[in-house]
Image 1: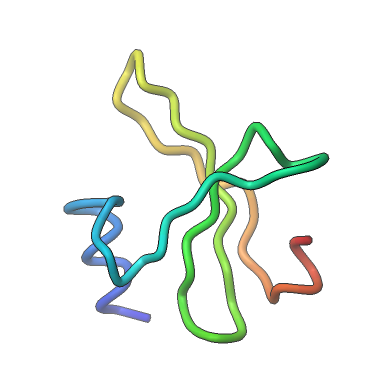
Image 2: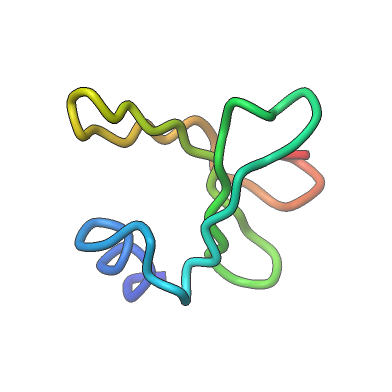
Length: 63
């Protein structure tokens, strides 16, 4: 988890995070993998170069 937080802070596009755009009712958000069980849903605000964490939870809790 610590490694993923470091990558996320330095480079949210790091391949190990598996950043991807969501579909369906969450299509305005992106997801980052913490491990096989946990995900973080995020929203990028590109104007300010900010990343807003929306939710952290298991696959079932988020989707």
